[in-house]
Image: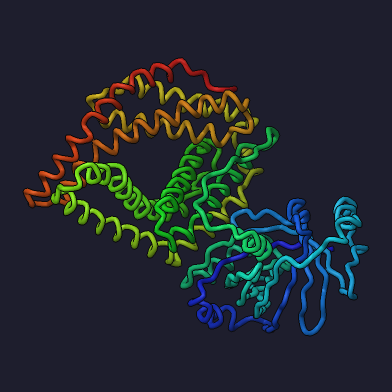
Length: 502
């Protein structure tokens, strides 16, 4: 049995040469090359996958080795995994596994008799041994090849940084040096997870935020680590689609992920060490700019301009205005794609991973008020709720800025409830979230309509016909805007009566 700590990084295929020529790797103590072929086994019903067990045969230098692993969950690309490796003598032998439960599961006769190859990988690996500091040793492995399953193929182009001596902080420090000129994005999915996805023909799809399992015994800062890493993973799961797909939902979800991360940092600010996020926040704000522009233009096009153009198909002024807006939207999406391909984006994710995988829980707790996580959550949610109610009381249908401020406060309360949901009664959380989501959506539509005119007038510039098109759009949406404003007081009244779950 061996325990490994690994940081996996995705490498753009066109940048593999830069990695091979990197100064740090040229100065490595040792360098080796090998071709690796692996075959992954499971039952036709994928019982091992459901149990999060991996069974692999790997051929290297003419020798086949058997490996059994428990599938480890990646924390923003950092994985801690345990594996059992032994020589393969023509049949599976699990006698080396000292985990009784795992060995019992995999040795069952009904399972063993139905094991079949499910997918395979073949890749060329270049390995360097780096010793960047005393008592630190790291294997750097560049893998280039393919995964094949069910007649389909996907490329492999990734770096693995495996810790031999030192701490996981040393992995991130090295990764950031390697990522100075190459976009290295932490890879959430292992080769095996990608192989199963290929076998099942699972299409790439936008990913929404998931629930975060928090323990009541955890400290507030330990909880922040899990929440922040989940936000980073949410960002990463939509990265490839935002670059390669025209589906605007990928960019929307990346924007949501960045907002959730900033909301989490604000929520836990009372227990954060001083200057803890100073290096992260500027890069995060910089990323939010192109994401926000693209998302706002997409909403303007899809929800405000397109419905009017569809209702008035013979109105050429609307067609011309929509064409100008489409050009701006296209450029905004190109700006997002460019930003996500820059080394700065990869370094942002590495900085976040380094921070939140190593939250200084002990140091922070020693100097802060000792709060249980449930008590901390209760106090912070109540503060968010008070802020919402204050803004709700001050909100006016005649003052768009007051409604915008209320929407932001509602959104922060919603995120707080989502972060702490597993600590609270499920049904009451769901009821509170339904109300908050409805109000946030209605206020969001009001804000979109209120801000649409300025953007559309900028598109129209001094063209009188296009300005008339803007007026047409405003008039067409007038009844919807009025209906939304009319519904707000009832929603705010219900909000004032709503008791947050404890």
